[in-house]
Image (tube, rainbow, N blue to C red):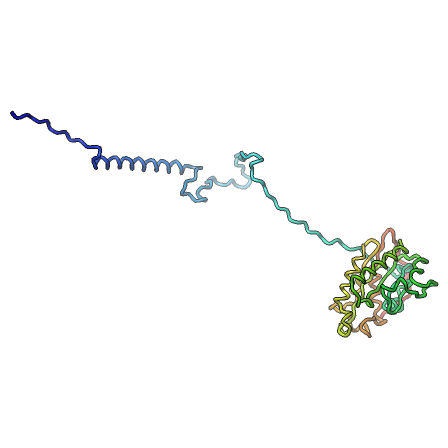
Length: 315
């Protein structure tokens, strides 16, 4: 008797290729759905997406019109003062202006009534032809800063500069020395000049002291005698300029009134290249009149009339 065998049921083994394919498709489906949900959530307002550009991450809220209030309070930083980034400010360095020089005024010849001029042959020429009226002078050809204090020139009943300074008191003392010292070392020259000014101050405690620049020579004279080169003269002028304190010792750049534009004495102003012609000393004289210090300690009032002097002889 034949036994009836049961009909086999169709099933799928765990390792069936079809089953594996179905499982794989399901995993891929859920992965795709998850990524879409993630992108949708990340592209919501206020949350920049990975693909967004900086422009896309900015707020799309329109800027308020001028004068319109937004009604939104500013957001306070949650950072503590210790953790907040420091605010760095830069301050421009202040420009240090060069201090102004002394304020000089213009006077007339009466200003020189109590003055003493000390110098060499150039000062001789000024007092002879420029004639600062009322002044006294102690000057001599070839005089130098090295020998001025020990010189024995006779002047106003005194022999020598020391005796004169000890015997008379002056309101102003003008010094011009240095052209005959051009061959000396500048530091040695300036140190000696400082010693002379110091000694003059000891004898004349109340006087204004004017240090006048060494005058230039002509270009031709410089070419013939290089020791008188403008560069050398300027170097020495800069050295003695430092002796001025703009309180009671002043430096006067007299070359400003006798300059050919190349820092030389104009050829037409001189016969020998170094000394002024008589008719040009008035330039120096007038320069001094226009550069006078007047203060409470050294008062001055204009004279009633123009005194007679070199100014009447100006060409």
